[in-house]
Length: 164
Image 1 (spheres, rainbow, N blue to C red):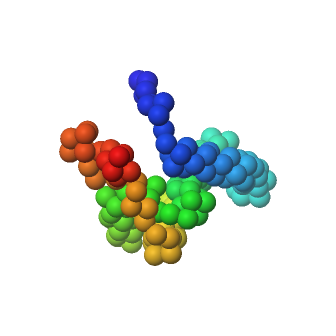
Image 2 (cartoon, rainbow, N blue to C red):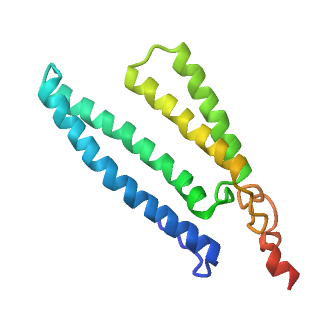
C-alpha cells in the first residue's frame, strides 16, 4: 500500500520531519550497538538451554529496545521545537489511557520481568511527555488533524490561511 503525501508541506511540518529523522538517527546509533553488545554479553555470561533459547531471548530484548526507540522521537521533536503541538490532545489521551491499562495488567498478570520493565518504560516516557506538556506552550496556529477527522476538509485550513 502506497501513501501519497501532499508536496505542499509547510515549514512547521518540514522542521518536525527533520527533527524526527535526526532523533531516529541518534537513537539508532545508540541502540543498535547496545542490542548487539547485550546479545554478546548474554551469550558469554548467561546460561541458556540452547542456541535457540539465546537467539529468541536476544530477539525479544531487541524488540523491547526498539519499541522504546520508536517512543522517544516524539520527546526529541517536542524538545527541538520547544512545543508540544506535534502530538494532538486526542492522541495524548489515547497514550495516557494505554499507559494506565498497561500498568494495571503489569501488576495483575504474571509475566516475564523484561515485559514488565517494558510496560514501565512507557511510564517514564509518559512522565517526560507530561513535563514537556507543562513546560512548552501549545502552538495554536497548527491544525489538530486528529481532533478534526470527522469535520469537513474545508474547515482544516490553518488559521493564517483563513485570515487572508
